[in-house]
Length: 210
Image (cartoon, rainbow, N blue to C red; front, side, top):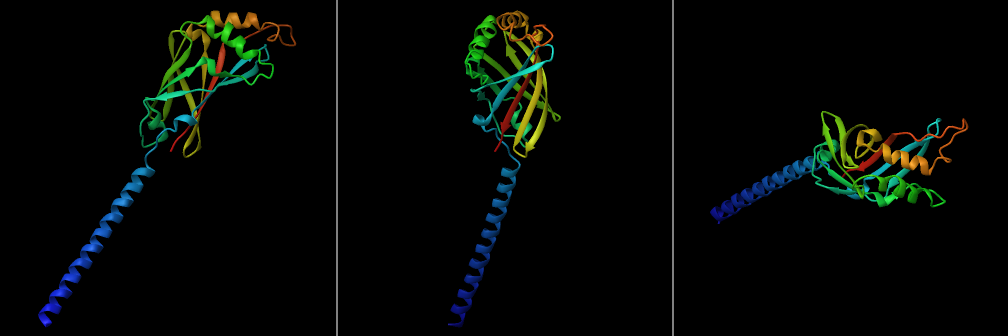
């Protein structure tokens, strides 16, 4: 009986130690998994927002707009939000243009007298590039591709705002600029009597990560 009792006690000790060891290993694995998750970021595709600011009159009065539809592809996981964006491709249908004009006149004018004057402008496409805490986008518009350096602000740990400047002459779009200027000549005339439409367009984007 004593031998049987000692044997049973030994088995219980082995089982107990094995359970504790398994629990310890599981805990360590869970901790590693949590650390990996904490250090990984992916873009929330439907959170991406793209806007722009054009300018009119010699006083450089801003005219803001946005695109309601932004198609994201080639997304991947990164150890930082910027790394997760590197190489991400985007495509923007120009017919998703929205300038919040209560008259409903401005958007059709821009589509007809600006975008329709260009080449292959059903879509604005591009790719995001990031390295060494610097970022830029290669944008294709009017059949031309231009690199736009971006400044960025970390709004939160998982949200970034990007800002840059597109010069229309860099994509050979001055004919389109002249077209929209002529169509909006009176509206782009300031108090000084001079009508002006600027070739500089500010671009802005927001991206959210998980």
